[in-house]
Length: 246
Image 1: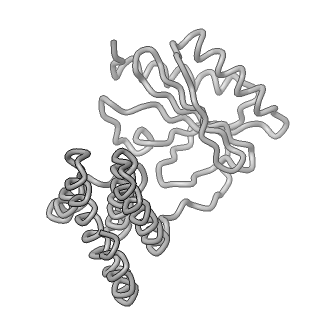
Image 2: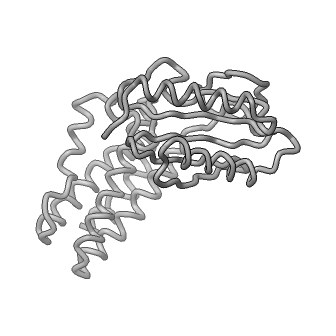
C-alpha cells in the first residue's frame, strides 16, 4: 500500500485547513519541494506552523499528534528539534512522510529558500549556512583515525561505518565546493559525474580485512584530494599522518 499524489494533496489541504481553524496557530507555510514547485511522486508533506504567543507548544503537539493517529493513519512519529521549534515527523500507513514543524511565534520564518507563506506573518530568521570546510575536514580525519583502529581490532562492522563516515564528509566537502545542497545527500546528484565517480572506490564491498584496508586507502586518497581544494598547506600537513593510518 502506498500513497498517491492526489491523496497527498488532499491530506496537505486538510492539514492547512485545520491550521487555519486552530486558534493556537497564527501562521503556516509550505517548506521542502512543494514550496518551490519541485515535487515528484515520492515527495513528502512539509508544513511549518507558527504558534500563537500564548499557545502551549506541548499541548498543541499532543492535539495534532492525536489527530494524525486517529484520522490520518499515522503508525509512528519522531521529533527533530532546532532551537525551540519541534519538527514532528509522522510515518503513515500509506508510507507517506508528514513533517509538521511547530514554531514559537518568534521563530516562525524562513531559515532556507524553501519557504512559501500560506497565511500569517513570517519573522525574519538567520538563514542556515553550509558548514565550514575546515570543520568537515576535521571530522573526515577523525573518522579515519577510528577506521584504522577498528580494522586493527578486527571490528569489521565498525570499520565499515568509519570508512563510510570518511566518504560522507568527502562528499559534503564536494557539495559545499560546488554550491549544491550538502545535507542528507540532497545535492549529490548535482555533482559532476566525473567527480562523483572518484568516490566510488571508497565503497566497502565486503567485510574481509583486505577489502576494508583497500576501501580505507581509497577514502584517505579522496579526502586528501578534497583538502587540497580548501587549503594546500593543510593538505601537506595531513598527508603523512593520514597515509600512515592506512
